[in-house]
Image (spheres, rainbow, N blue to C red):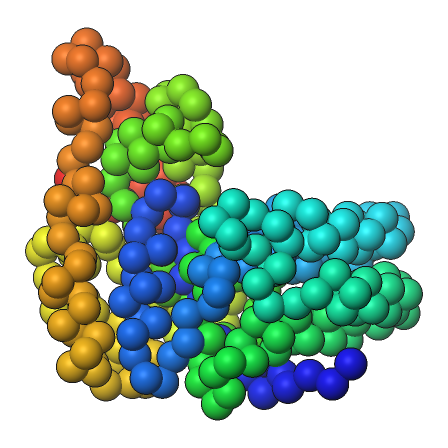
Length: 297
């Protein structure tokens, strides 16, 4: 199958989940030098069971690397199921056929034990070439939230990629999670998930080459330093702030649409007090570990 895998310096946006990666992806997708993937979250690279995690297993010390065959089969299976056909419609089905995935998957699983990195890059780049085929010559932008949490695992696959990591008040993250059909359903469990993912983001940054990851705060983007933060992102990516992108940003991005401070109105007073106390304990622990604490919403 002929593919064009010319983009080796993608832009990956991520966070803890419910932290603003979708909206930033849509803003950057308005820039003429960039292309927002369709689906907006490809998932098969960064999500649990994805290509990055499987590569890490394949490159681990024995006996863990013995699991590479099983893990690569799971990656392919998820590419053909939960990451292929998603509501919307969304998923990889929009740009690649099942027959093409069968062919790529078979080669990937056969090669993973022989040359894990080559097998993974061939598999990943081939799929992404299909996803970005309608925008040749442009850098693609993916908004899978897990990007920021496993960017150290993605780095071998895309050494030249740049990552924008978004942090957000964990109480708003937790309040948003419990309203979704996915993720933790109980607010205190959601707060713990936010803390665990925040810590993992810090670990990923520490393990990556310096200068490849920019961390911004959602509150800065939507309220406090709107234009400055967006221009900071553009400067990091080496592009100028495009007028049409800025216009779309001004018209569509606001603290109201981002539901800033939602945790204060979503719960009763007693629950808010307990949330605040639990959050304070988590923040104190994260601060001791050097994790960047988001601005308070």
